[in-house]
Length: 292
Image (cartoon, rainbow, N blue to C red; front, side, top):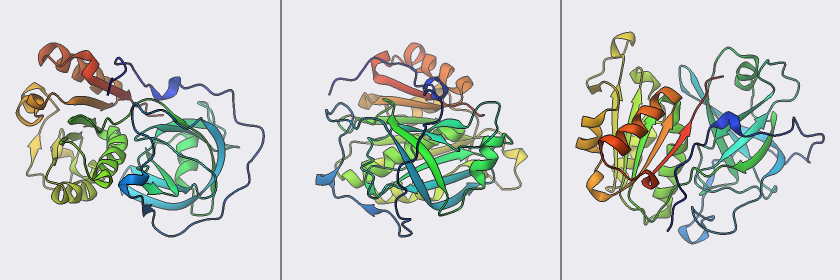
């Protein structure tokens, strides 16, 4: 599969001309857990034709899950809407009526997998901005305006993968790992995941379960400021660096290296990969997160 040249997928560069001027019919709220799609029923993957055309939807929230002291996941029903996406794209999510200096719309990476049929999920750090506070107040049955799918930060299931996640940058990788697990024929996947404190390693329980169930998955953690946490941390301390990538990243497999996190994390990691470790630029892909 030929990959596109490396490029930024910066969330707040995706432009939509304001909120849409009409609502679609709201679908019925679904309260059951998302069902899994069998491998033969998977949606198109990276490089395939037939990608979904972005459209506007009004989707009801079906699950709100607190992932960490600062992070919440929101899962919306897509039943009956025709909404589909690839692993893993993004959406623009709007909350009409929110008075926020940054506007009432934000772009989010999708943290769910296309194999989780009938739903789409996002995961967000909750800051003190009016938009994020309004998002945190959503409860099952409330609706959000969604435009998508968007973006080309896509998992390539034909190649070994190295995921490098900083903080909230884990969100697209949760969807990619879930997709790879449900695909059943995934190449080796390694995740190196850094957070400030142990309690902010979101999805940790699920990621560990995926790694236990799939021998071709490897999940490794590091914490940069363990002394700021009341939790004990017996694991690695420090940032994602050259030594850790060289030791744990399995670069001998010639993986596609995916990087996601804040700008101050993504830029030096990309330079480290391409200049310090000899990874071809076309074997890197990245997504930059903003905190507002």
